[in-house]
Length: 141
Image 1 (spheres, rainbow, N blue to C red):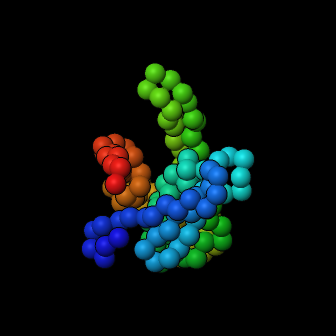
Image 2: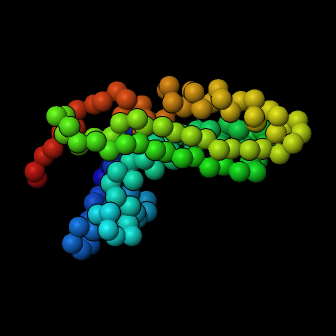
């Protein structure tokens, strides 16, 4: 892994049958496994990445105005198997965010729809990458 500021990467380590740990350059670890284990499945991690990316964008802007009373983001999709193979459809991100009463909360509520749209349309690298559909190269090395 490199320290180039534009490069992103993780290392996946097998820790047992159908169980893996993703390790980032800073030493963070996330367990993933099949749906019968306690770790996240790769699909759940993808959904979490979509929600996490846009949550960070939205929180950075809204929390400058007011600290949220509640900040929850739901990310849902349907997994289908068809002639195109396994994939997700009908992806939906739902923000459940509330702010305190008062002027600061009003300012945060006012900016929420705009920053959520900007996150989707251009800021969130994860959802933008999925929507743009880049080629994924697979190498054996």
